[in-house]
Length: 146
Image (cartoon, rainbow, N blue to C red):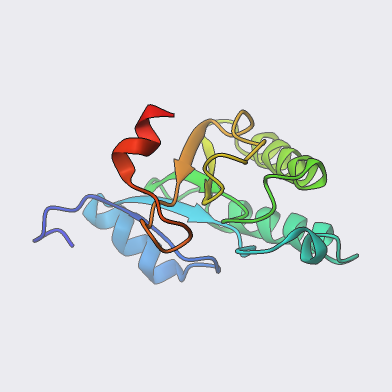
């Protein structure tokens, strides 16, 4: 990564190994770390275990990795139901939990619901997954004009 000129990375949607984060700390690589929930529709987010599992995951993520200087942002709910009112409530609850545990780092979540996401005002940093023609035909310059 460093030979290619990269200085930051986004991790996957599972707990990161301490050795990996230690290496990022040592090498000065900036890390976006996020919780495990990804690609869930509203029905999955309504599972009675969902909120508790996310709360546990966020708590463990921050408690275990708070002291890694390489981590510069906490992320949640990759491409989940951010276009729904109930989904928005879940996003808000998770951002609030993160801020209560670590107000020093910004929050984000990656969305692919470019024009329907109603939760974009909640994170500190808005992040879009832009895979042209993967989710929908999307010509990037047209996206910028909207």
